[in-house]
Image 1: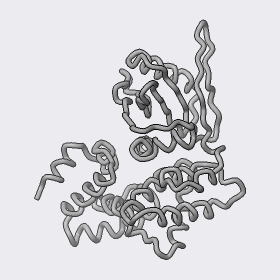
Image 2 (image 1 turned 135 degrees about the horizontal axis):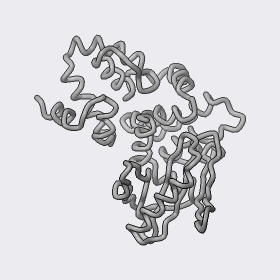
Image 3 (image 1 turned 180 degrees about the horizontal axis):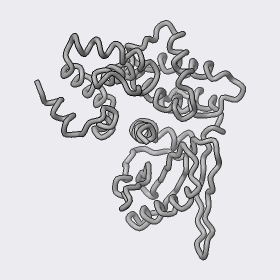
Length: 281
């Protein structure tokens, strides 16, 4: 599913250190991703595999229930262990509302791993930090008895205090992506509209909506505020020309650290076509 792929890429790029630090209690000085080395024949690979000097950290991000998750985790463990020969610490970061088995005991095989149910973690624990990555993670945690709008507003206000405008846009985009994991799209949209100094046009989702507008008038948008971006994008595409706006959009996403393959998925195209647009005058 595209949404899962996009969210995982953003997490890998921007918040894996804080998942490790604030959720697992593991400090990582330098992130060295290895997951692409473990792609299986059936095109399945572990989500996040990090070399942490004397051991390998494997994080699997799961937003939906999988009754055979324990078998998948064992396959990943075998792949990682066979290639690296290092101790492997495995964690399933569960975003779903259902618990999954964290063990396998069949025939002569006994295997287990840790599951972190992120929705059971207190969001205040993350809101109290001054780490933007950790603060964004609060969106996925337990709000206790708080109204979701209150927590979303706290996150936005704190991010604005900590970040410059460019960085804030990047983290706002992460919030929009992660919001789909717990049905907070409408809530974020309402808070956006209520905070007078936050406008749709300021954020990446608006630009992505514009791009969708260029490509046949709208199928479905990415996240909050996209509908407005799509409408405006059709008008703007006619006025300024499709190529210039497409190039601007692609460069903006690259600046935010989004990989070419993810951008291609967002814009329903291929990597070669993206590079051609960037190189055209």
